[in-house]
Every structure is written in structure tokens, then in C-alpha cells.
Length: 574
Ligand SMILES: NC(=O)C1=CN([C@@H]2O[C@H](COP(=O)(O)OP(=O)(O)OC[C@H]3O[C@@H](n4cnc5c(N)ncnc54)[C@H](O)[C@@H]3O)[C@@H](O)[C@H]2O)C=CC1
Ligand SMILES: O=C(O)C(=O)COP(=O)(O)O
Image 1 (tube, rainbow, N blue to C red):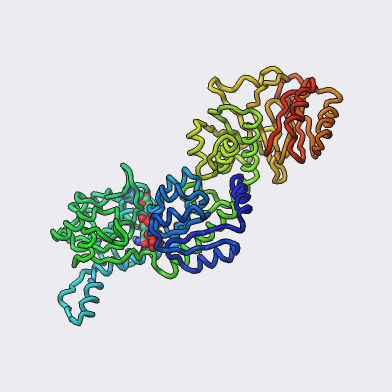
Image 2: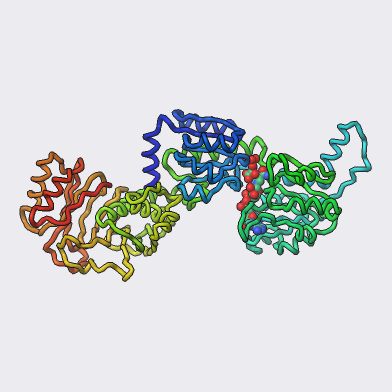
């Protein structure tokens, strides 16, 4: 992929100095993997850094690995001038400001499946502990008592379990609870009832679920905003719960209004709660949480849902692999803030990404000026793929020379929006001039710019169409405006137009010889693609495309421009 190659180049430069910071405890298998794959990297494990210490340190690092404790805020990210990736060794990324990361082009990855079973099993452990008072009975006996009659429990068989959030963990809990012969109902606005029914789960509204369940278990991610899940279970929702029902939260503390929960427990409206997660972790000065933890009918664990040997090895290696992938300039498999593209698809798209990025570079150098709307059309088999990475590559190519922003797959769309650039995609599996062809058309506010029909050979001729293809894995530009040259966009290329008559090539060659610049390839593109006759232009002017080994000094370019009939002299760097 285009930006991947760039990042690879960046990192290649910095090979000796790759620095990875790990601020929460992760399994050593993940660190071993980093050491094996990036032997030259400096890996610093600094758990327990204070926010200001993290802010002061982060500027040196290329990768940051965290779990749920480190708060990766916008301020931390603002100081992270070299950071390419934040790896979350776990699922929830609510401790990472992913929007700020996206704006800065920092990729955020997680381990979406590594700890699912651990979280589901812990939820079941909490369910059974609540039903049978295991923690209370254990503490009582260790205190030398034998309180057999105090710990009368309930069976879960034939009870109704309400699952709020039927995602990966929610579904794993549902399956396990079915094994306990519970009846499962669920609320999740994004799950099709039919799909749930196939798994033996009945979808209901949140209100119905609250009214019918004996046990309720929460499994949504924590999101803010008007439709977010923060405070999903508040005073009203708790009041709807069946008297004597029990609540389990192994998802995120912020999902429950903790003060309202304490009240519902004190009023004995609900029989108990089992909490693994809290709005403040670790609990320091939050009085409500301290009272909840101390409450007789509340079971607590210190965010242990993911804490199994298996899950920790899983998430640590999963994230370490992705950190290596990104630091090597490739695309990770579980990016939270970028399109998810299968690695097989990426392999196919890579030369096209390079092509499109170079088309963007070519356009801005040949035709500098404001841009508002671009049509990107694809013809051939390539049109059948998810081509979002190509759009990102185009934005990078178009804007990198005019913007300070480091454009990549993560922030391309955000940056395009900031520049007022709209990209429209057209796809057709019917081949155009070439089997797989990409065409970029710059659309002015009045439709297509008029220069296609413009005067041939004038110096201010507009270039608003570029086409390219990939042959044997190598990108080639096959159309520049009304000309149909064929060249590999690489290194330095001189473009100029000349009357289609003898002696022109010699004249250009002579000047380049004077400055000792070697020509290693040359193509003279006619203004008509004869095989297809798609253009009706006068054939009297040709486009010369000259690949040179070194940049040509400005004075030589000036001299060329003054050479009578040679016009539109432009040096392009790819
Ligand atoms: N305690 C722990 O150590 C662990 C906690 N978790 C947490 O568990 C939660 C679930 O994780 P996954 O199942 O992997 O996520 P997931 O993304 O697979 O599932 C979340 C589900 O919540 C649903 N949802 C979204 N908004 C909702 C709403 N307003 N009401 C009801 N449902 C809604 C989604 O449609 C989705 O199906 C996350 O918060 C995660 O951070 C995960 C692993 C370990
Ligand atoms: O993966 C998650 O979402 C978790 O909550 C696990 O958190 P942890 O990695 O144990 O701090």
C-alpha cells in the first residue's frame, strides 16, 4: 500500500531507533514476540506512569501498548509526535481518544477476540457467585464461622437471563448460560432478531428485558454522545427490574449509574450485583464506589474479566504482531480507526495504491491549484474490490506536497474534508483501454474543466484526466490529459510538449547532456490513442515523458522552455 511504503521508508531510516513503550502489564509472550521480530527496537516497560510522565515521555516513541489502565488522552497524543500506533492488548478502547488519534494519523489496533472467552467465563463465575453467595461464604468461613443458614442461594436453572449487548462476549455468555438451562432474552439494537432466534435467544426491548429477567448481564461497549451507552442503566431502568433480580457488569463501569445502583440495593429492590468494572479504576476517592464495594450484597473483582493466562497470551501476542506489522509499514488486521481490509485483498490492491498515489502526485505537480471534486473511476476486475485504500492513497498523493499533515489510511478522509476535497468513486467491471484501468478526472464547479477540448499545444493547457494501469505488478501511467504515453512513474520525470516533427528529441537531449543528466527512458505520447480512437485531437503536438537519473537544474529547465517550440516544461518527482 502506498502510505505503507512511505511508513516503511520512514521506519527504515529510523531502524536503529524504533522505540516501543508499554505502560500496562502485558504477557511476556507479546514482548518476546516484539524482541524476536524487531531485534533492533528499544522496548520500555513502564507500568504505572502518571499522566504527566506519559506526556513527557511519549514524544520519543513509535508505538505505545496499553491495556485499560493507561489513559491515552488527546493531550498525550498531541505530545506523541513520532507515534504511529497505539496497541490495546484487549477489546475496549474507551481509554483511548481514537478521534484524536485519527486526526493525527495514528493507527489504533486492539485484540477483538483474544479475551472474549475469559470475559464470558468470568461473567458466568459472577452469575454463579451471586446465586450461591460463594464470596461471602468463603470470607465468613475464613473468619472462623460456620454460617450454613445465612447463605441460602437460588438455582439459575429455568431462570431468565437478560443479556444487554449480544456481541461477542454477550453471545458467548448466552451459550454458556444455555448450558446451565437458563432461558435467554437479549436487547441489542444492532442484532437481527432472526439471527438471535437461530441461537436460541429472544430479542426484546430494553424495557421488556428489564421487566422479565431474573439476572441481567451487561455486554455493550462504553460509548458517549446522545446515542451512547454511558449511563444505560440508570435509576429508571433499575426501577423497571423485577424485585429481587440481580445485575452483573463485566463490561464497563460507566454503563451503570453507580449511585442509582447503590440506592436500588439499599432499598432492597434488587437482590444483588456483581461488578468487575467501575467508573473509576482503581477506586481512589469515589465514595459511591467505596460503598458499593463494601455492600453486603455486592460482589466485586478488580477488572479481572480478561485476566486468564490464555487471554493474556492471546491479546499480548495479537497486539504485538500488529505493532510489528505497522512499524514495518504494512496494514494491521484489527485497526479500530481505519477500514478493515483482508490481507489477501491488500496484496492485490498494493500496486494500485502505489499507482493512484503517484497519479495524485503527478496531478498536483503538473497542475498546481485548488481542488474541490475528483472522480476516481475503476474499470475491470479491480472494480470488484473494496477500494477505500485507493482513495486514501489518492488523497495522500494529491495533498502531501501541499499539506504539512502526514496523510495515511487513518486520517486521509479527515484531511480531505478539511481541504474541502470531495472524491466520487465510479466502478465498472467492463475493461476500458486497459484490462484494469484507473482514471482520475478533476471536476470543476461547472462540470468537467473545458480543457479536453482546449487548444492543443498552448502552454496553459489543463490536465484534468490521468489514467493508469498495473502491468506485471508495476504501476504505469497511460494517459495524461489528451496524450497517451506509457511510463513507469518513478524517480524524476521531465514532461514537455513539442511539435510532432523531427529534431525535437535531439534538442531536449542536447540540453540534458550539457547538464550531465542521464536519460534512462523516454516516451513520446501521441495525443490520440490510435488503437481505440477515443480522442479527436489534432495530432500535431506530442507529449515527451523523459525519465532522468537526477533532478535537472532550474536554469536548464528555463533554457528548455525558451527553446522555441518546446512548451509546458515541468519536472515531476515521484
Ligand atoms: N471485564 C473485562 O475484562 C472485559 C470487558 N470487555 C468489555 O465487554 C464489552 C463487550 O465486548 P465485545 O462483546 O467484544 O464487544 P462487541 O462489540 O462484540 O459487542 C458489543 C455489543 O453491544 C451492542 N450494543 C451497542 N450499543 C448498544 C446499546 N445501546 N444497547 C445494547 N447493545 C448495544 C453492539 O451491537 C454489540 O453487539 C466491551 O465493553 C468490552 O470492553 C471485554 C473483554 C474483557
Ligand atoms: O479487553 C477489555 O475490554 C477489557 O476490559 C480488559 O481490560 P484489561 O486488559 O484487563 O485492562
